[in-house]
Length: 160
Image (cartoon, rainbow, N blue to C red; front, side, top):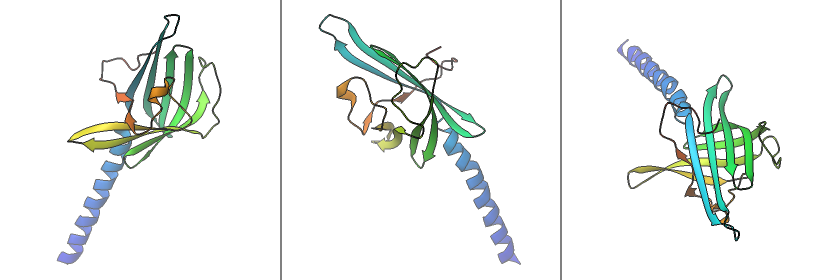
């Protein structure tokens, strides 16, 4: 009888742990992320600066990423699905927003992936590029820190 009670308690604790931790992992990704590119200036003196903003929200169907990139010759407005996979978050293209200028992506394209890595006790967010590439060529190397989670300021997004 004690053995049955131990099994029931262990089963309950296992279910409680997985029931609580699985959604928490998913919602750990919710928030705003920023990536700024500074490519210097053109020969004419125009600044080459692009700001990328990604807002990840939780919906009934999962995580959705709203991505906006604005700046030098850039206007991207994308809707993507964000799929957690362990310490990674894969961002898949879903559709274009109303302020998008070019349409190089197909539904289901892997835009990029974010991966949490701990280095010297500090968690970093590494980017692996897919179809979505930075504007400034020096930022094209995967496995580097590009996107950072924005501090909560009471506003949902930097972009309107």
